[in-house]
Image 1 (tube, rainbow, N blue to C red):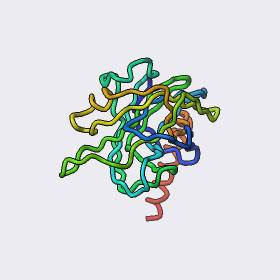
Image 2 (cartoon, rainbow, N blue to C red):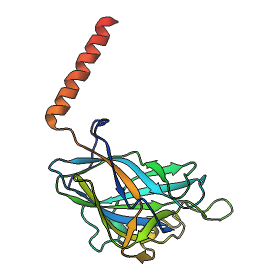
Image 3 (tube, helix red, strand yellow):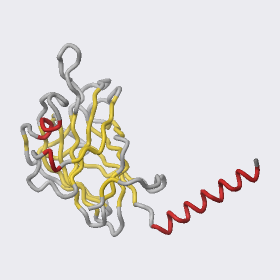
Image 4 (cartoon, helix red, strand yellow):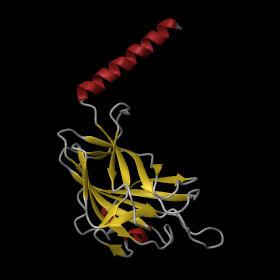
Length: 216
């Protein structure tokens, strides 16, 4: 198990792994496996692309949860899932295209490790007691795997929707489950720098700081 970590940003090697770019149905949440097929640790950057329902312009909140192993029949047990973060979307893109969310935290997936990921629409009722009519998460029927040689997304299942935060996280997981289903979206990841690379980065930063001080 690796998990949450604070590592330097990796700008040049960030990659988007796409799962099912098209969707036939939209609902409250999708659960799927992410496998690191490489020989090095991979960093989930916290950025995800979602295919959301509607003509665009909807404002909603989304949550991403992680599980340190594969789904393995624990899709309704909220206690084994950890919140990676929450992201607010001010104005979604039209369905059939991607809307990017950034939950603000990273997650390290060890070499050869498979983890579970869950993405939920997490918007509660508005001041009038109304729930969202758009912004639901896209998926298609069937189970599929999507790989780029470094990582694989194995889709999973989808969840219903009963009002997000009302009454809470247990309600996100303990709702109608439909399987097999394939999530429509993308996960951004990057290789975790080797210790030697981190040291070189640190020395470069120190040297840059020293040069700046000398010039001043």
